[in-house]
Length: 272
Image (tube, rainbow, N blue to C red; front, top):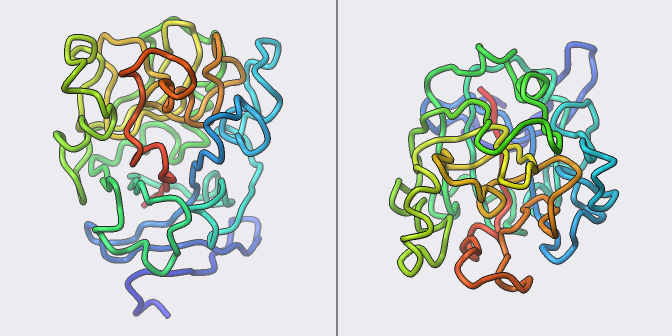
């Protein structure tokens, strides 16, 4: 029934295929359809099974596209488990949309409580209908801006779109992205600007990430610490759906990890 403000719905693709997804009818006027979730099953697995948004085939420069799921018609997962596993439904490539909403929801959080604003680590949406410029969905956008190792040089990114916060703000985004920001301001002040969603960011080592959620990289080229998804190769050991979010615990320098809240949350992607 369309009287519900949120929940699970059945939709049909242009080819007549029935699929299940989650819809939000309240945020910023409603009309949001969940099309994907990016979930890091193990930050210690470096492009291993479960890293569907980067590579399940290992960290391999000879496979620059990795699994290629940002720009193909593969689907996987179920809506019920979108906070505990990767999810991609046919709406990702079938829906022609104008805007996006992004929810960072803690791992394993039950579907019936996703709509509670306080449940989200971060929640925002776009309002400028930017997807009309890029084919109407991420499937088409990433055809224009391929998520592929060595496709460009660092700083050569795709569009950065202003966001409107539904839960959180620019200051909380800054703190969430880097837990050590107060101790490492000299490193980070030029890395990124909060208040945006950015697509197809490339780091110093020419690894490519699909989405920088909540931020726009500025002159910093260490995007592996705060952007998600990617092509099939990261140098040296950054490969994965959340590439270097847990860099410190992986033996790197202290001060380059994302916050635990961001690392242990699934990123839910909605269209409208």
